[in-house]
Image 1 (tube, rainbow, N blue to C red):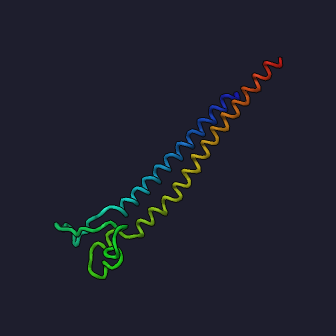
Image 2: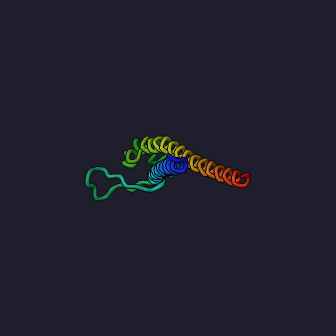
Image 3: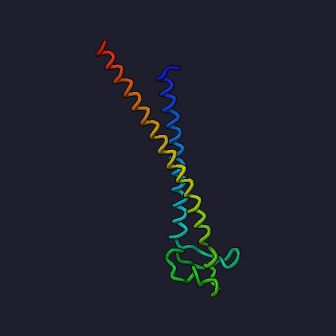
Length: 133
């Protein structure tokens, strides 16, 4: 295999690694968006199945101790509808996904940059050899 063929194959692998990293970062972004939706949007809580008039609940992040903390003791149905463990699980899942994505994007970018640098050095060596001959 010629060095140029190997270099092109190397760049192709680096591009695939970078694409996987971008995909993982997109998944992490979706997880962060889902977390933001759970925290920032109001929601409805049904008292029983097929409830025609569900309770209107404030967004979890904007409650002032009402539905988030004291609601369960007052019989408020909003208290258990969107729990904090679900939001924290989403954030916890997004951390390794985003970390892996960042590592893959960085690795792919560095590999492509180093390959381009090596090709430029080979071309400069070829020019210097042609002038010296």
